[in-house]
Length: 217
Length: 280
Image (tube, rainbow over all chains, first blue to last red):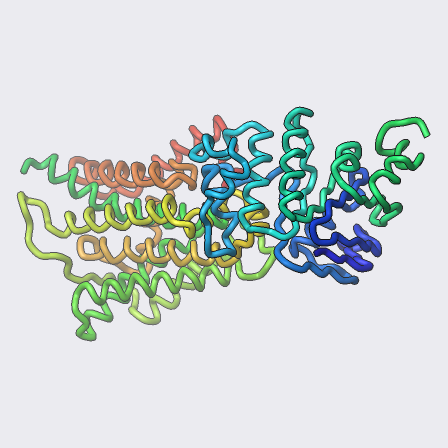
């Protein structure tokens, strides 16, 4: 679905991504973890086609949709309008199937998105991305600022979408959540992939455990 | 009909032109964050174009419509020049529109001279009120109503609002933000052109008529913080009525001062609560 090869992104003289390679296969749940400033959001913007790489390749097969960090909803518009715009590139902008997937959005459909709670907003951001009927979903910092119970609910929802065949690249500071949810993971530090492997192996590695899971090495 | 009632209807008619001018500013500002100082030029250009088209033998209605469409195209061109280069800030674009507004003077004087011109509107009157004022009010109501429906009820309007609300998110869902900005400029140009075309039969137009229109239109728009169409309409109508009353009962020479005082009062009141310049 996604194949990134030796990707280099620079902002002026600063190198944000320095030879990053990663893949997400069809239907796969992959995590990318790493600290603040590692280049995670740069990778997201490159995947979304919003910035031009200095070198390397990005290949996306099928439709890619993005749930951006901070949700970035259209706050003056209603939930339903936000969903409709998620399918801006598509001809069919019917929101009915999203209310089937995310039933808690239906009673909120006429509310301005800016008036919702953080968890509800994240659900709308997810719904907006699903409106594009994507084959692969890139989710940037889904759990940031949300209560654990809300995060769990969102994670359950992602698992269901995954069971329906959706591939997911989950970009998370919350490594515990990411490693629990995903089957494979990459660790990004200072613009480079410093570790990769199955989520179980990474969770078991002393370096990852110490740096990201808050456990003693 | 009494004198006061006549002044009120006349004032609402004039106010409609201010509301249209202000709405053009609001549409452009909402989507692009650019305060378009060339807004008055659209009106002048369209009005002067109508004089030429009528002189060339085109029928009323057709000439006016053509001029409004031309103003839309000019709006698109202003948008291209002011915002077309990627990475242009709204502040730089504002200065470009100011420059284009001055440039428009030169073009207008070259094409139409520096003397005021006018053309006939709807003839006749009912109850002491020129019928043309009723036409202005009717057309403005229909056009602003249609604009409101465009924004509230169509996906294109939602995309315009989305671009204004969060350009980054708009790009994420695949909305062409630059194109939406240009569309807003075209719409703003047409609204400005309509203001000029409607008002010229009751007020002559010359190359520098844009100042009075834009001062009043901007005053109306600033009441709605340059983003709220409803308040812009209310502000435009209020200004038109107050100016007409001042002109009728005091002196016509105070009319532009009314708009300036109104704008200053709104700005001072706003500055007490929020940094308007920053918001603009």
